[in-house]
Structure formats: C-alpha cells, structure tokens
Image 1 (cartoon, rainbow, N blue to C red):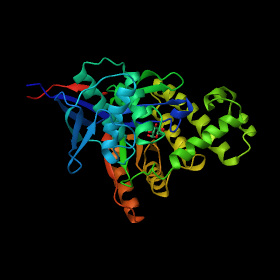
Image 2: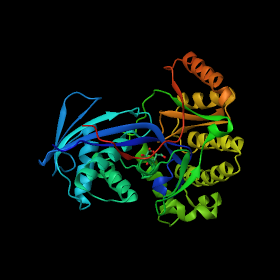
Image 3: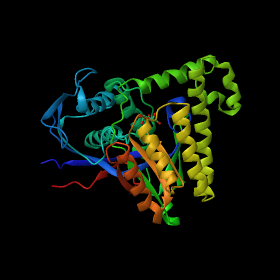
Image 4: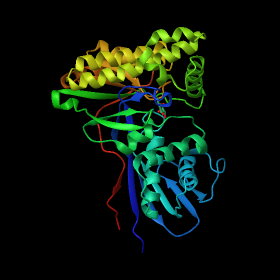
Amino acid sequence: MTDDIRFSAPGRINLIGEHTDYNQGFALPIALPARTTVTFRPDGGDAVVVRSDREDGEVTIPLHTTPGDVTGWAAYVAGVVWALRKSGHQVGGGAMRITSGVAVGSGLSSSAALECAVLGALSAAAGLRIDRTEQARIAQRAENDYVGAPTGLMDQLASLRGEPRHALLIDFQDDTVALVPFDPAATGLALMLINSNAPHRHAGGEYAARRASCERAAAALGVRSLRDVQDRGEAVLVDVTDPVDARRARHILTENQRVADVVSALGDADFAAVGRLFDASHASMRDDFEITTEHVDLIADTAVRAGALGARMTGGGFGGCVIALAAADRCDAVAEEVRSTVVRAGYHPPTITLTHAGAGAALEPSRH
Ligand code: GLA
C-alpha cells in the first residue's frame, strides 16, 4: 500500500507593503503559525477526488481540467492541478483530504495556504523538484487564470518561503526574498492579530479596480510599472492627470518607502519607529488607496489609543484583520479596549490573538 503524503502550508500576515506586489514593489510578510494540511493518497487514476473538513461532500477533478470546470472552494485545488500541467509537470490522481487551520475570508491568505499545500502534496507524490519561487508562480497562475482573481505573488511566496522568527523582505522586481529578523517577543513586545470577523470581499471587483488604477498611473508616466519611478519621488505624480489614479499611485510609492523604513527600524530594534510606520501605512490605505472600512479604522485607532505602538490593516482590504505591535504587558488592556469599543459601536466582537512568524510550507511525517 502506498503511504499517504502529508504536506502543510501556512497563511500569512503582511507586516507592511500592501498592494505593492503587482506593482513590482516591496513587501514584508511573515508566515503564520496557522496551517492548511493536505493528505494525499495516490491511486494512479486520472482524477483527484478532494474533500475538505470545511465543506460537505467531495469534488472530482479530472487531471485534464480546464478553467471553468470547477468553481467554489475546490477551484483552488483544480487550479493547481491545471497550472502544474500547464507548466509542463505531470502529476497523478488520487484521494485528497484538506484540513484547514487558516481562517477563511479574513485576509490571512487561506487560499494561498491551500494552493501551496496542494502543490506540495501533488509534487511530492510525482517526485517533482520545483524550486520554491517557481512553485509560487505556479500557485499564482492557478489563482489568476483558473480561479480568476488578479492577485500578486506575495501570499504564495510568504507561504512557501516563511521562516520562524523572520520576516521576508520581498522585491517583486525579481521575486527575491531576503530574511529580516523579526522576533518582537525577544524584547518584551508582541504582535497582536485582531480579526474584525468582517469577511473581506475581493469579489466585489475593488481589488481589480485598484490594480487597474495603478496600471493607468504607470501608463500615464510612460513606464511599465510604478517601480520604475520609485526613485523619482512623489513629485513625479503631477503628470498623472486623473486625481484618483494619482492618489492610488502615491500610496504605492510611499508604501514602498515605508517597507524600507520598517526594515531599517527593525535593524535598529526601534519598535517605536516601526509602530509609527504601521500607523502611516494604515492612513495611506485609508486616505489614498481607500481600501479600509470604518470598522477596521476603528480597530486600528482604538488599539493605538489604548497604548499599542502602532496598528494597521493587513492584506487586500475591505475588512479582514488588523495587526498591532504592543508591549507584551499592555496587550490585555489593548485587547479589552478594542473589544469593548468595537462592540459598543455595533460591530461583531473581534477575535484577538498574539501571533509570531512561523515556518513555511513543508512535507509532514506521514501517518500509516
Ligand atoms: C491580497 C493579494 C496579494 C496582495 C495583497 C495586498 O492578499 O492576494 O497578492 O496584493 O492582497 O497587499
């Protein structure tokens, strides 16, 4: 009997650098401790039959699936099967079980965790050796061209390349990753993860609209991507005549700079400066990129008012999670203040946990 293959991949939190990935800019994510695990039993057949602990029933995915065949949650699985084959990798059929530990719809990249875990399991079963940057691109292709979400490469790179106690400084011009030590607990601090429990909605087309705005701004400046004008400063944006596109582009240019500034503040162990940069990033997402909601604004503002060093929404936007950096001994007070203020304002209570940088995707010991 063939052994089951178990492969797990984490969700991610982006510390800073939002919507910069598809603009060939910079981001600084960490892998989450929460992971999605795929258990795969190859059977030599011509389909992957998948079930998930979160969904009823099973879905049969023919190995020759093409975009449009499978929709809903299993489209992420089918997309990986399709993208692997499209990229020239032969994979085999079998029975697949998914156990998801990453909150869905919270901006923590449960979809990238699923794609990367499926990709790892299918590749391991087929004996494929694909380097991790290429794996990330294949998983992104599944999401862009099979599922139909025009997202960048950050989530997949974070899930695949994550390292404990480190953030990943990603340069999306060439998709390279540099490890940046990130261990706030070592200096008496903590990273709070405040889930608003308001599902984010990329489906509404707002994500695609932001992307289109950035592309129009680059075109107005006569460059391929906004990265090409990064060194020229904000003044360059006078040539973007559409005021909305200009503000979107300003967020990208200032956000790229904040990523660099956070990396240098972390190098100096200056967490107060990191906190101020989180706040500035949140303000830029609220005012220039317009991807926050009153609900997440209230969470971020309240966390800072209650003593956090800084707070910002993380992920694609329109709901989801806020991260806050705070002294470990202030976290309970911050959490209490956020909870009571948010509930008083009529929103659902948030889920508040402490988190840290975890490990990237990995093969797990198999169970017999
Ligand atoms: C989503 C996308 C990423 C990235 C972020 C915003 O998570 O999947 O590619 O664009 O939004 O930073």
